Length: 229
Ligand SMILES: Nc1ncnc2c1ncn2[C@@H]1O[C@H](COP(=O)(O)OP(=O)(O)OP(=O)(O)O)[C@@H](O)[C@H]1O
Ligand SMILES: [Mg+2]
Image (cartoon, rainbow, N blue to C red; front, side, top):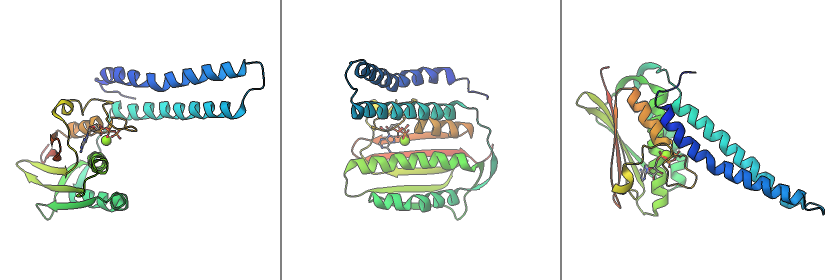
C-alpha cells in the first residue's frame, strides 16, 4: 500500500488519540483483575459491564485505525465526466429523511442548467457529504428556529464552484485555524477527520476549499475545482 508523505505528521496525531481508549482498556483490565483476585465469588454483572467497556473501546480503536488508513492511503483518482448537479441532487435524495427529521431544509440553486466536470465522482460526492454533514450537525446543535442548508453550484472564473452555507452557530476566529487539523473536533462523537479528508480530496483535484464563518451568523464553505486540468 502506498502512503502519503505527510503520513508521519498525522501518525503523531493518531497516537495521541489512541491513548484515550487504551487508557480506558488498561483501567478496566485492572479492575477486572482486582475483582477476580478478591478471593470470594466474582460479581458476574460487574465483570460483564467491564467487559462490555473493553469490547466497545477495542471497536473504537479498530474504527480509528480504519479511518486513519483511509486518510493516509494514496488514492488513485478515477476521473470521469461528472454531473455536479446530479451529485447534489443524489445527496438531497439520500439525506432528505434524515434532514427532515432534524427540521432542516435543504435549498439548492444552480447557476447553469448543466454543470459538468472531469473528476472522481465518488470522492467529490464524499467531500460534499462531509460538508453537508457538518452543516447539519451545526444546525441541529444550534437550537435555532430557521435551520437551512443552502447548496449552490455554478461556474466561477475557471472553476466549478460548490458553495455550502448554513445558518448555524458559526466557528470562532480562535478555532477556525484548527478545523483542518486531523482529530480536531468539538463533537462528543466526532472523529475530526471529516475536513482533513475533504481537503485532501479537493487538493488531489487541484482545487481549493475555503471556510468563511462568523460566530452567531453561520458558515460558508467554498469548494473551487478547476475546469481544465
Ligand atoms: N458548518 C460548521 N459550523 C460550525 N462548526 C463547524 C462546521 N464545520 C466544521 N465545524 C467545526 O470543525 C470541526 C472539525 O470538523 P470535521 O468535519 O473535521 O470533524 P467533525 O465533524 O468534528 O467529526 P467527523 O467529521 O469525523 O464526524 C467540528 O468539530 C466543528 O467544531
Ligand atoms: Mg465532520
